[in-house]
Structures are given as C-alpha cells and as structure tokens.
Image (cartoon, rainbow, N blue to C red):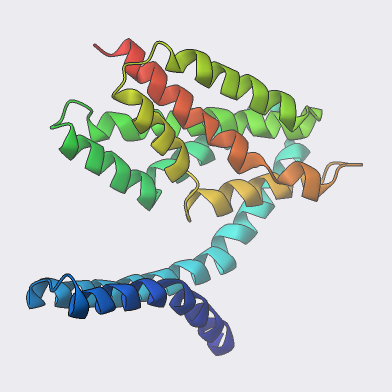
Length: 231
C-alpha cells in the first residue's frame, strides 16, 4: 500500500504541479493577485492533490473491481431487461455524482441567472448518458457495429442543432464533454469490460471500449431536446 500511495502521489503531482507553477510564475511577473487570493489558490491546490490521490486509490481498489464484477455477473441472470435497467441506473448515478457535471451545471445556472436550472440540467444530462450506456450494453450483447450507432447518434445531433435555441447548443456540447470525467469513465468502462469478458467469442478490447464516446452523445441530445421542449 505505501508503494501504491507513492506511485499515485507522483502521478497526481505530475498532472497538477505544472499548472501550479504556471500560476505562481504569472503571480510574480504579470498578474499580481491579492496575496489572500493567492494563498487560497495554494491551499486549494494542496487539497486538490490530496483529494485526487485518495480518489484514484479508491477507483483502483474499489470502483474498477466492482464494475468488472457487476458487468461479468449480469449475463448470468439471463435477463435483457435487468442488464438494460442496471446499466441505466449505474450510468445515471455515476453522472449526477460526476464533479465536472456538478461544476458545469452550477456555472450555467449562475450565468443564466436561473433560467437554466442546475437541478433540472443535471438530471437531464444523467438521463441522457444513462440511456446511451444502456444502448452501449445492448451493442456489446448483440454485436452491433459502433460506427453505425455513432453515425446515427451524431446525425440526430446535427438535425436537432437546427431546431435547438442558440443558447442551448453550446451547453449541450459541453454537457457531452464533462460526462467523460474521473467518476463516470472508470465505472462505465469497467462495466463494459466485465460484460464483454464473459461473452463467448467476444473481445473485451474491441467490445469493452468505445463506450464513453458513444455514451457522451446522450447528454448532447438530451440537452438539445430540453432546449426545444422548455419555453
């Protein structure tokens, strides 16, 4: 465990320290923020590093093994509706817990002055990705080609963009991006890999990956539909 903790700490430091160093250089050369705000930044950076280390360890020792186990167990129940339902629930729960989604919806709520509510938007995004996670599981089970599903999904996106109010279009595409965050990605990937690993004659490499790209289409479509339906 100590060696594992050290490796994750080094990994996080390599990711975070360049940003911290750039901000520090800018502080002493160009920006010169108030010292109180700069100290808040340094304290926040320490918290982020600590939190990310613990988060990554938790993902490795808990989330990934459980996702693989759930994905591998579902086909044994021989119930298509159970697989679809569990995939939908896991996709939805992971999305509304995703920190990137929470930040985005909060920012949109503030900028729009409440006209696009964060409480509604986060559930719309969750439903969108949950639906496509369920579709991704069906793709693995029935062997549909990923290219066909992606083409159909983005064709719907293009058509909807012609009718969606202008202020919802950029929000929709950002919603598709933030769902590929540190909470959603490991859960969906491990679920897909676990499912494909127990299917005879299937490859976990070709069937278990690509799920995130497919699932991220869901929030785009969901938010566009929200913009069309809501007044």
